[in-house]
Image (cartoon, rainbow, N blue to C red; front, side, top):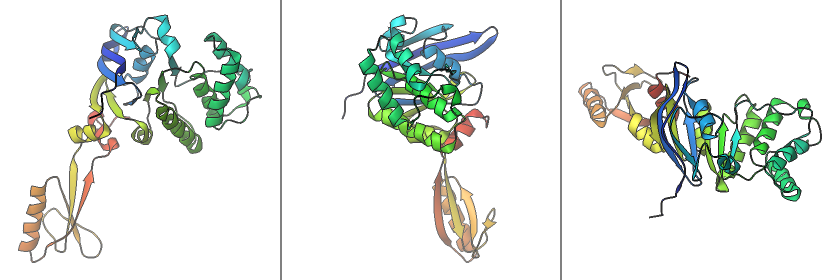
Length: 297
């Protein structure tokens, strides 16, 4: 059995209030070294407040956050972390190269190393235009520059808030593939997303957030097992109670247990027919998300 990976990020009893509004309510989770951890939830669930607190941009009202052994209030923590906010204003009169060099200088990265990192990130993000003002760029191109900015200090932990939000399908796919690439390099990544496909295709574990609390947490398989369900679609060649007629003279009944399947079979045989097909459908992450959050988006 492989050894458990050490946690590089730990959140315990985290709360964040704005006046009378409690945006984050007692959130707890750990993220292991090299793990990709996703936060999903409806708008206003507390995802952004949580991520900004992890990045040291908001002070927690209560609770503890430790990143790479540093308390979130320690300025040294930020040197080991890269943060991508959902909205990333850029210095639009600067070129991508000059903009990223500026941030590399803030982290005291020497010019040769900085240029290597900048070129590598922009190559992998498929951004070839590097000497035009950022203000001339599309939203997708600006997002790529912002992602590259999060990497100039070669951080061990990346906190990304909606990295593919509002992007066209092509750019979204580039961002998803780039996230996979970072994970393959061993980066520890925590990100929020509305696109559940993004979460399913990249994350090792997921937390579903609702009303400032974690409503479900674990691997995708664990979440489906704990909060999902299995449906059995039983097709018969005769009508039985509660069945829906489908094509080719067959009838479909949906049940949630093998006992239900046996019941449909008995009814079909009593009517002079039999079961001709059984199809199983397991809950998707979207099914679980809607069930846990009450259908809110």
